[in-house]
Length: 150
Image (cartoon, rainbow, N blue to C red; front, side, top):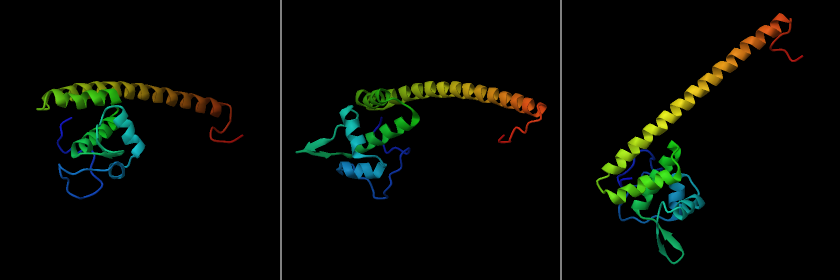
């Protein structure tokens, strides 16, 4: 995804961001409310690629923005493979147009899937409401309090 400041994941600190700034894994974990292990996992999956100084990971502003987009993508329900594909599109087309079109296409697919799931849930809820009405009526017909514990 483009290396523009995302609005989806607000930074927890109010310090200004500097494109040359280097972040430690602890700083990013604290800022985004995740564990260092999570960040290392995203690194293992090839989603972020920090520089190394000995055993120390050094995260750039670019890595920070990518991490922000990874977390937003996860919240939206994208798989890590989808997130990686979307992020990598920016490397192919620096204008970001191809990436944005693909994000739009995938977002529409997710919306359609969620709307289908919502219809399914509504149907299940309505079916349970019918069961509730029928069972309540049957208990009352038998002279039993539907809310009682006996």
